[in-house]
Image (cartoon, rainbow, N blue to C red):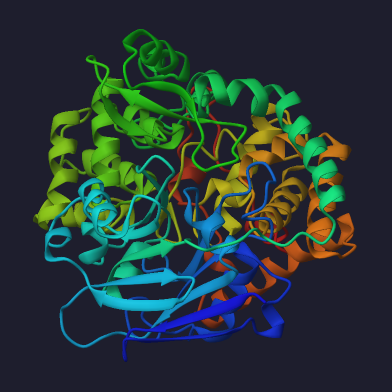
Length: 579
C-alpha cells in the first residue's frame, strides 16, 4: 500500500496513513494541485501557518520509464498569491516512489527560531534540529556536503537555501541530483514556504526500499521501448538537446526576433554567438576536465539536455546551465560573457533562488538604475549578498514586481507578479497567451507554445499572427497539466506530439503499471481537471479574468525587428481557458 505522510511542524510530529481515496489515482501536479485546493485556505498568507507544502512523485516515477524522474511541489505561492506547482529533477521523486510514498505534506509552524531537518526513511519520519553550520548563510553546495557526511551519500535531499531561510519570494527548493549537485523547483517562491515552516531540509533515505510494483511487467517494458525510441528518433529530443542543451534556443529565438533583450525593449541581440548553445558546446569541449557536454538531471534520463560547465582550468562551475538563465542574464541584462553568467548561475543555485525570476529582476533593476547594464561582477556580488541578507540583494530576491515598484517603473515584465521568461509574447503570440492565462503567473512550461510557433513541432503556426493561437495555447496547457502529473520531463512532448505511437506508449506504460485502461480521452480529461481545480483555487484567492493580462506597455510598445505589439483583445484572451 502507498503511504501518505503528514509532518506537523507545530507539534514536531508526523502521521503516516493510507492514501486518501480521492488521491489514489493521482500523481505529480494532479495530486499537489488537488490537495492545495482541498486543504489550503485560499485567502491565507503564503508564509503563515495555514499554508501547506506538498511534495509528490509522478504516476510513473520510480519505474524504468525513460525521463520519469520529475517531482512536483505544491503550495500557495508567496510570489504570485496563486496556486503553484513547481517541478524539478534530481533523485527525490524516484526515491519516494520506490519507498511507497505517494506524498509528503508539511504543515503548521513551530514556535521559536530553530530550523529543522525532516528525515524520511522506510521505518518512519524523524524531525531533528538542523546543524548550526548549514544555517545563517551557508550555501547549498556546502549544505549538501555536510548533510552527506551526516546521513550518507546515498540519501536524497530537498533544501531551502539562504533565500528560503530569509523567506524571499524568489526562493526555490533545491533537490540533490545523482552527482551531489542540485536541481531546482524554481518558480513561485516555494523555498520561502519551506523556510516559513522552519524546515531547512528534507533528507530521504531509501535504504530498504523495493521496486515500484508493475501490474503487467511485459506490457510495461514493451511500451517503454516504443516510448524511448520515439524520444531518441526525434531530432530535438534525440540529438539537439543532448548536443547543445536548452541553450540551443538562443540563436533560434534571436533569428526569430523573439529573444527579449535590454528589459524587453528589443527582440534580437548582436552578441548571441557569445552566449549560444553552440558556443557552450565548443567551450566545454575545448576545456575538457570536469566539463560534460551532455548529462542527465536524474537517473533514466535519455534526453540528457543538462551539462557540466567548467572554467578555463577544467574545474566544474555549474550544471543544468539553462537557456532561460543564459537569456535572462545574457540578453535581457546584457552580460556578454558566458563564464560570467555561469558563475552567477552557480551563485543562484548556492543561495537558492529561481534563476528566471532573479535574472528578470536584475534586468529590471538595470533599467531602474540600481545596477549598471551588463555588469556581471556587480550582479554576482548582489546574488552572493542574498546569503548575507544585504539590502539590495533582498530587493532583487523579492522578485521583478518588487524591483519595478522600488524603481518607479511601469515597464515591468510580469504576469501575476511573476517575471516573464525568455520568449517575447509580442513576437511569439502563442506563448503570450500561455503567460497571460496560466494559473501560476508567467510560465513558459505551463503550455510550451514555442514548439508549434518556432520549432514547428506539434503544430505549424505563424508566431507573428493570431490565427490558431487560442486553440493551441488551450491544448498545450491541458496536455502539459497531464504530463506534469506523470513525473515525466516536459521535453517528452517532442516524442509524442507528432508521433501517435509515442503518445500511445506513454498511456500504455501507465496502464501496465496500474492495471487500468486509460484512453487518450481520459488523459485529456485529467489535464482539464487539473486546470479546473487550479482555477477554482485562484478564484477563491480573489483572482479573476482581469488578472489574465500581459503588461500594458506591450500593447503599445512595438518590439524590433518585426515591430509588432501584443494585439489580442481581452475577449480573445478569455477564450483560452474555456473548455
